[in-house]
Length: 237
Image 1: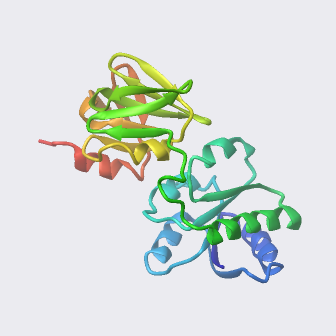
Image 2 (image 1 turned 90 degrees about the vertical axis):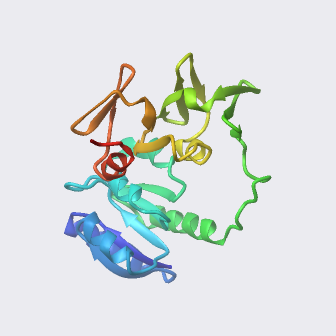
């Protein structure tokens, strides 16, 4: 597998490179001290796997992932254990390695990446249907019941660990699902993912200030990478 390493610390990059050198199936093509340089490289090159740090100046690892339309497999390499649950909201993330990383633990991550690479693509009938759509309705599975939600009434969806909270004009729903799964069910004309943990209905925005939007009484952060797309959606005077 062709891979790249993204980490702002030179020592950390060297350690990951050394770990990679002990795995014959890995071929490290490049190393980058920041996400911006990596984005330029990925615009011109295809790779199979990224080793990605989370905490980097100006652009976090999650911000970086948000910029990728078709991300390759990603293994997070970080000193911070607090983002593990959030990390697996992303289908592209195959493992979460907390530094210091042993060769044995590193190999397990590589095995997961290989397994995902070799796995056949699931058909719709094989995947877990947590949500289904019909016209302007979204059906969510709550306590073994399919509850119908009027899609235009949804104003905010927030990721909360292994669950998402769907907020509507009339009621809030907590669903065992991921932001990614429900995002695929929503019309792009109404909804936009503005942050790794939030999807908003752009027609419900009351106010925008700096890097946040106000919807109802909720103040929602907007990541730097998603702000340009949000501004495009607005009917600016």
